[in-house]
Length: 158
Ligand SMILES: CC(C)(COP(=O)(O)OP(=O)(O)OC[C@H]1O[C@@H](n2cnc3c(N)ncnc32)[C@H](O)[C@@H]1OP(=O)(O)O)[C@@H](O)C(=O)NCCC(=O)NCCS
Image (tube, rainbow, N blue to C red; front, top):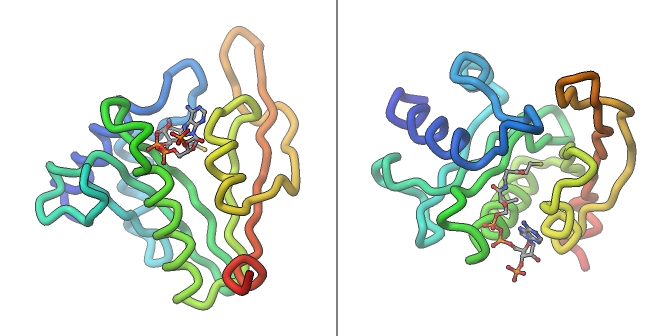
């Protein structure tokens, strides 16, 4: 992935994730992940299309693929572009792409109180696990992570 695309993702990342939860990645984490052959990013414009120039992106997702399953590592939409269906469109694209690559399951992890939960549930994800005290909120406070899973075969058949 080129520098302009990394810049675009970092710009959205920094605006989208509230620092109090410690969920955002830094540039090094992002570029190291995207240097791996099995990890890739999807960018989206305000129109719900893939940007010709990454500067036009307002949303992104990062996905890691393994044989038979994929994991959504990050998904975010810039605050100024929210509640217009872009997060939902990104998620639908990730589901379709994972299915095309032959995955049977799609996973993601979120902090317990993330309102994104309703978005995931609308797309058929269900909670399948809990990692206790996974997020370090500072000052000794911690929060659980919930793992959500989607059975692609079942979802796309129904
Ligand atoms: C989660 C996120 C990607 C959703 O993006 P979005 O473009 O606003 O999502 P959509 O407009 O497609 O929302 C679709 C539906 O999901 C639900 N939803 C999305 N965001 C919500 C929120 N903050 N609170 C409650 N419901 C929400 C709603 O039902 C919404 O439909 P509606 O607007 O018709 O009510 C965005 O809020 C974001 O970037 N959050 C910060 C980063 C983050 O926490 N990412 C997830 C990490 S696991």
